[in-house]
Image (cartoon, rainbow, N blue to C red):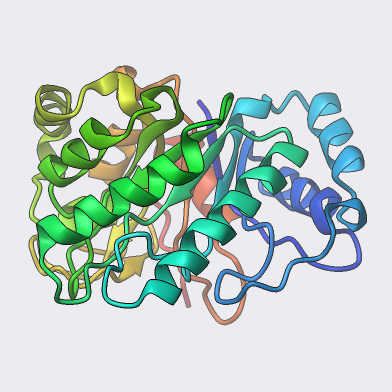
Length: 286
């Protein structure tokens, strides 16, 4: 089982601390931001203790393919309304790709973006334009477009939208999909028939494009399009359904990453990973 969570990257230990945090959860996968997701400030990679973190990953038998990087939220490749926003998105994503290479990572999870009332097709075409600008000369990395809940004008609530974008990308070897259980539930997919979801994904996009899975319960009813994550077993999806997804043999080769909410300021991941490995829910929240 390849299971882990989002972990922090902060002073003084930076990436070394990220790996140590993952190990404290008994994880063998992890996801990081290379800096704050809400802004463009980034420390030089030379200060991030990357080599020490990578060495600890090797010592701890964490496969480098189980290191996932999440691109910052401020990147909106689908914005055709404000040229400066699109320019920031392409420029900053290009820099993020180089930073991910410094971490020896391969998968960069990216929200497809929002069309900000320009229209879905216009937004998707703009996202394609941006991806082609940053990926045409790239190798050995994959931009994993995340399935989205569908709030506001965000793109990616339907598999067809992601398929449209992938079809327009020239360098298809460098694009893939991150499937988020909370998001697809909130978008209206029946996660209780996950094989059916995978069949639909395969028919529309192709399972070969699925590169990572985010495991999250949802505070919302199916189809609510609100994107509010919940701790495993405390939401509308439930622990049993999520456990079946995690253990589905068709995605056994993919890293599963938890992004569930902190409780009273503390990360839940050690407890949730323990529940997953034991295969049983424990009512642990106060």
